[in-house]
Length: 319
Image 1 (tube, rainbow, N blue to C red):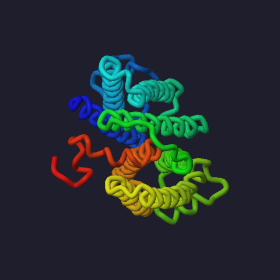
Image 2 (image 1 turned 45 degrees about the vertical axis):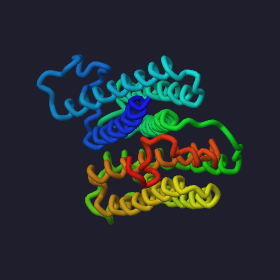
Image 3 (image 1 turned 120 degrees about the horizontal axis):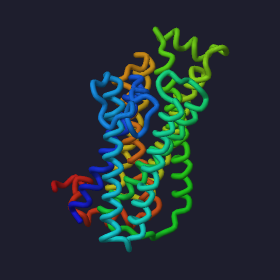
């Protein structure tokens, strides 16, 4: 079981890296590097004498394919050993579903030409759907890793806490979708200066991707502020040292994300900062999913969190 726990956490954070690399593909305009072919790359399994864009896109497809294999391994292990564990079973099945929908959306982007310089409404909608599906995949993998590490059962019915968490989750999905639009606009319509970018944002004749990206910072402040208030309420409600550390960790990431967002705007969204921005986004989402697990399981779960020595670091004690 210990090996499976470590493998489950490894698969989760491997997928985080795959997601960040996918953003690198978009930011560098390499999405069309394999042409309109899928799953082949320019009609070949391994492209010969590839250009840089082709190599980047092919590498992303390879890492994504490995992710599918890893998740199928998770499903097989759970099926063979702990299929009776309902929470773990549902989580691993959800991860299998969302990795396949993730692959289908990615294939659709390539086959329908929604890559490269395409600035259509269809691409915008597809990018938002891609981001939402990615968040759901990460949520599923987070639950797999968590339930593999900690034995949990549904105990008390915290409808108020669950409802508050769901509102925040929907807000974060909306925030992520708006971030996908903002990032696409920054990639396709870069500004030469901060003032030019601001003028383009409010120009009624500007492309819709430019005019929509201005909403992302506002949504980030609203949703982030709500999540911070909710977590502080939950910290007082649970009165758990373990949950307090997790909660304040998420809050710190949100504040850091706000600051990085300001830097991103001032520096005109360079690729490196975009990638760090997305990395923090995924970590915030993973932390918020763990907060949701506490809301669903109940306060007694926090008392049992120390049963697994693999995560004694949560209590601040050495492993």
